[in-house]
Length: 411
Image (cartoon, rainbow, N blue to C red):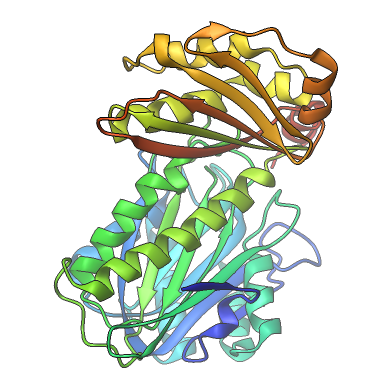
């Protein structure tokens, strides 16, 4: 199994497009299409926010009763959230426009939106954009890149990744994903949108099971600003064009390989999202090792990277380890504090801060130098050899630019 230096275009059985529809932004890509002429099974994981966008509600219903899908339509600049009955009608109208433009079944389109909350979709622009997407779609690298760019809002760059592996019978399996996310990132599934496509032959039930499992350990383990969006979603589609034996048993070698590959794709997209947090200058990775349970490891790692005080300390190159301990202490789980080893690492080296729960004297100049790099890791080892569970979470520093982005204009 290997990661590739390519994006969606590694799957020629899919087509993509990104166009300038003028939904909110002038002269920039703001609508995207993912399309497969071959019907796809689909899976989805959605925001836990009690206030959910119309597209989220629409997709949840579609996934309940629609066996196959052909397309995903995404718009940036408008969330279609808190728009009442009009928002629901606009989803239906968008799906109808897609069915006409792409010559597909009315129910075979999924929808995603990101942007300003409380403003109705400009449907004339949306419908015109869907027609443009249908005409522009293709499987080239340019088409894939345009789709990845079109879903961005305050993101500073597109987020794509891909991989391939061989199934048990030797067939080549491909997975690729795109995502957007920069602010409102504290998913409990931020604004976070993720889309994964694959050609693996798999049942819908196991695709959904795999996505739910992987999301729990990847997209749900990142935090930029502790805000959970109304529009968070991760969708996975497979058109089953690969020649592997259909996966219907989660005990099979191919299912386990697929979960591993999906984990790698979603982990890389999560990392890219955290690194591109609004105003961020540094990626923070919190790793908790040898914990008594997976739940404890996840809770502690997520608490560390969600702490605004930890984020500010990393931004200021300050090895204020007390803030890390404080964040672990209010994570809501018990852990063996007397066994804790704590260190901070980067390309500049590493510095051990605690050993067996006791603070060590540290070289502040060395610590400042280590924290000065753009990727910093905080590693907490609980030394529980009986279960040895681990977890990793991604976050970023908190900078004055974050305040500027969210205070100076409406994003």
